[in-house]
Length: 281
Image (cartoon, rainbow, N blue to C red):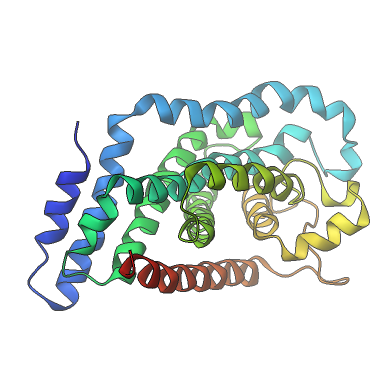
């Protein structure tokens, strides 16, 4: 199945000008990622394998290492929102790798000859990655009872909305180094050095209160910490506090606003660099 020619034709179909042209370009790039997702179900299964392993296997085994008093309940219920975060982290990070490989294969250069703005193209790439990452994370919502969350519409819809916000934020942040990197190997090494520390230092897998004090302090600068906090407080409103600013815990609405601001800022920075670098070849 050939993905890139279809996406290019879809983007070129927006040559009518104005806002409609830009929206068609975004639609073409989002459709391209959806087709990629459907064409390679094996990759989706592999990306979900690690979070499933953590939930079903480690969720029971690690519970003996974390006291219930630090969790406010069972460890598996505490872990489930972190598993959802893991489920969107990997596919969001893969967007950066695809951007670099598309540049090497000439697909980016082919897209740049379309009438759409370069910032619009990068926005479409980001939204396409966000949509597919959200869809893959949403698969794990079917395992909500395994995480101590019954099938109730409002909490599940809230988790889905926050998964989309998490996917958008992580995808936008991934694009910042991706537009500055020319070799996929370099970018993969960068992900290996940053992804695990950010995840383990976010409170997604263990409470921040059980980690060294400097880790809990650094969590205030970690976007994954706010994401894990929002997901956990949506799934279990009585969950213990996560990120603190001094002695005060920011409310979920403020955390969501900070994540959205971070994502938009990162996307704007990446779009500016993307336009300058690609125009110079």
